[in-house]
Image (cartoon, rainbow, N blue to C red; front, side, top):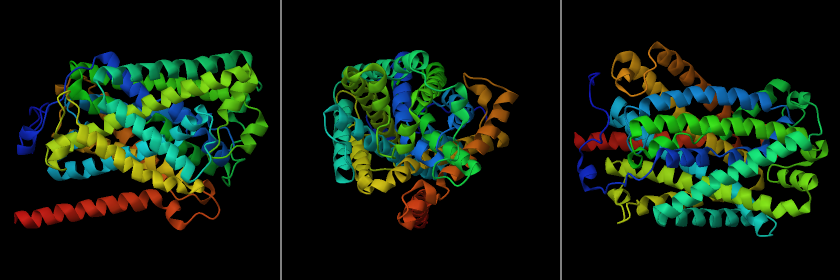
Length: 479
């Protein structure tokens, strides 16, 4: 058992760690905050799901967004507690390893990497739509959309391999684009182009493909989960942040709070400004946002609006590549992945890890060859992260109760309130994971194959099965 006064803030001195390169501690609180903000992304978070939400639920999903945000703030609190005591590259993977042991760390790392890559794939798939529209092409579907998603991923990779100051600039521009493109536009729509009363926010629930209001609300909660993931990116870059024990928890809270407020307000403004026919006739891969902007502000607004959204998506995608590559880097440093992924360039960038992440996300884009798989792709990118939230909060709760982790030793001290928050956060994460993974025939095309319905449990089950086999073979070899 690990004593409660054990040091938990330095990497374990493995051979892999000694051989690995070190990261450059060059990020300020503002940089960490902007990376977290860009990763959660109000634009990517809301614009990526609004088509699926309206098709499946019909409307009235504002309450689901609000509930999801409140519960995610509790999860973020647990992450803030852990990061205030264990500020190491890899975030939740490293916490699971140091608190739960090497085997727990292996499972956490595999789930974390696979789910964040799926999250990146989803962002590239939806971001490719906006990239195509900006350059004047019809995003189409199938292979066309996959190709645009691949171009999007390549741009994100380049942004991660250039000098860190260029990366910081793009992320900062992305945040400004978010402010103008989501909050600014939403303000104008809300005050000058509102078509419906506020009651519209809670109407039409269950008028989509969902068979009832209860089914529609649960589906809305599942899809809304996508809008509030990514805040943990702040914890995976802790080794590149100045004074991380104080700065990283602040960045986690601030990024999720800011994004959550913008998403809720933006969602309300768009819903109250939509023409009802636009909502009814939308599809999961269509863009229902731009027509609202052009009809409200005029045709001149289309190109600048598309540019703003495209920059926001690119900042989101680039920050996701950085976020995931640091998990890969941390796992390689511990010997749980090939050590080549722990090497860094002279500019302190884990180039091999970045390339690996982009290639794997590119392979995931192949799921998008089927137009009807959009809801499945989003579930794919969301379900794994909620499995990781459940695992992290679960490990935190178990080690807190057994004395293996003493939160009072961290910079963030919540006392007994921390335990209550941890319990609720774990139960919520577990519920939301099951809710996301639940097979919903009405959320996919009528002729969808069976594996689309069961995609999340099938893939995660396969990943856990392969990891278990790897762990067992490792034990046999050691014996």
